Amino acid sequence: MRKLYIAGNWKMNLVPSEAAKYAKELAAATKDAKVKIMIAPTAVCLPAVAEAVKGSKVIVAAQNVNDHEKGAYTGEISCAMLKDIGVTNVILGHSERRQYYGETNEFINKKVLFALANGMDIDLCVGETLEEREGGKLEKVLSDQINIGLDGVTPEQMAHVTIAYEPVWAIGTGKTATPEDANSAHAFIRGLIEKKFGKTVAENQIIQYGGSVKPSNVKELMACEHIDGALVGGASLTLDQFLPIINC
Ligand code: PEP
Image (tube, rainbow, N blue to C red; front, side):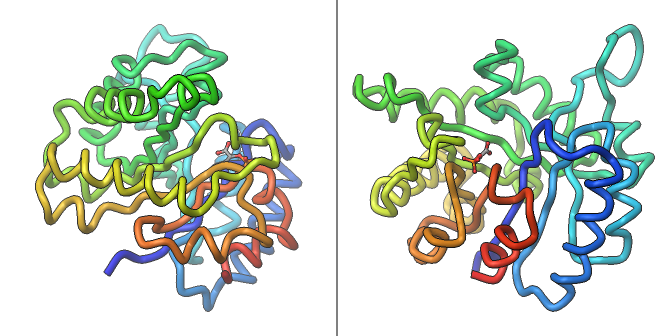
């Protein structure tokens, strides 16, 4: 039985004082929640947010991490730095990092391997652009993102990997994939996981949907067989939007 996993990617929003206040409210409001909950504030907010949710059900993730232990990598953040402040999760391969910062599947794979080897849990984002979908490239894009992104990962390490299927055309646009389209992409991803890691890993694999998830559409998405949670952007920024999604 796969446990529902609801995550909020705060992107470059909220200053540390706002983030800590909201995180504290969220932790208090979700103490009886049945689902797994994660929030990913921007790096500068991580220490305050990690402190604010200490002892609660809320997991804190970084939005990115470097693939080296330490050294001359200006502007970067290491796994050790995250772990030192109690952050053990990280989002990797988000479409905004692929699109604006040129992150390739191969580069993301280096970070995936490094983060896993350093004891972090990861949320690997995959998804196609509208052009790729309309050009009939959906399966090829997802296959490359999964097969290259997870190259070298062991079946045992997959217990620390969540996949987030986020069609790029649905992120921040208000357009949501239909539950049928989303479910069929999730089923395809589960098939890729089965081919690469075997049936048991595939059956246990948590695959979140992301792309304009909101209180009004979350129930029908989460009711789909292969959708095991959500990675939420815009609607994770306020308690009145995020809480109904968590309680869906
Ligand atoms: C995201 O960027 O991960 C996301 C899903 O954003 P939104 O919910 O705003 O579409």
